[in-house]
Amino acid sequence: MGKLVLEGVKIADFAWVGVGPLTSQYLADYGATVVKVEWPGRPDTLRNTSPFKDNMADLDRGGLFNDFNSSKHGITLNMALPRGREIARELVQWADIVTDSFTPGVMERFGLDYATVKEFRPDIVYFSTCMMGQTGPSSHLPGFGNLLSALAGWVHLTGWPDREPVGPAGAWTDYMSHKVLATALLAALSHRRRTGEGAYIDQSQFEVGAFFAAPMLMDTATSGTRYDRMGNQATSASPHGVYPCRGDDRWCAIAVLTEDEWRSLCRAMGDPELVSDPRFASAADRKRNEPAVDAIVSAWTSRHTAEQVMTTLQAAGVRAGVVESGRDLHEDPQLAHRKHFVEVEHSTIGRYHCRNFGFRLSRTPSEPRWAAPSLGEHNLYVYHEILGYSDDEIVKLMDEGVIS
Image (cartoon, rainbow, N blue to C red):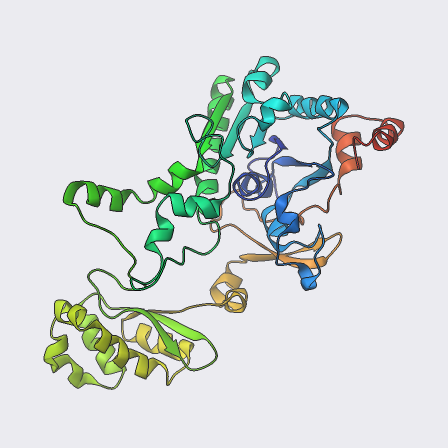
């Protein structure tokens, strides 16, 4: 592999959990040197979050942590101690980018907030990402993306109309916010390269979540439309849903948007006379009689495997796709062709698969370069090679509890 597009970019990574680490992971996998800082007594929360490799709970075996932190150097640094804060300042002096994903005020207490850092590094690119942003009456509230999914309205919209909300899977806003933040970060780096000026990026993950609801918000504001839970249905398509297939918990998603597709579906199911059934004569009729439509489709899909349903309907020109499990995704031939999962060697858990990104750069391709770090794995390299400490100085820092 040749020179990577972000080779030479240096990042002091104080962020933890989701959005911050995922953002710096983009840059790390594309060549940036990222030093991830963790507190000895309070490591990244995801180290204590399941699933764990071999179902053994351990700080180095957390699946999410290892998935979010490839290609990074990991160190421990006790920033509760004055000497630890001094070293953190040295790391910031070395870096081009500083990351922060804590509740507002935390980095300020360490003397590492943007206003302070800018005094000695005016060209620094610095991002803060948190629930509500750095300002406003709610900015002091701590929390995670699961809470923001509710605040931004997505929990209310997810589920069935006759039941309570189920919410989107996981911390939904985390998986949106880091893409937005990475784009802003690259723009700030481009600006710095052209002008020599640094930048401060203040991200509100709440606002990112609300932004992705913009079409619904606009519709409500202009026409008064009320959006509510509707399961897997669509406002103007039927059948439109996830249908049971042969096997244990196997499903196929099917969406019919046009009359041609409805006729093709009826033929594929071996029931072409359904086209002349007055209950299903038009899309509006099918919507009015949707329970009957779904019952007919479910009766057919349940006799076949999800793969058979998908293949048959796609060949007939009907939108259909297997609802894939984790195992399905790992074995998906399209993802395998694209090398979406990359095997890396971890110092504690051995070989495991890391995600690649959903895009490839033609002139500067990349992938996870090495596994996520075990806790403090790169202490010697970073303190010796990057910060220039001697072996005796490193031993002294260990004796003082600054490094563990």
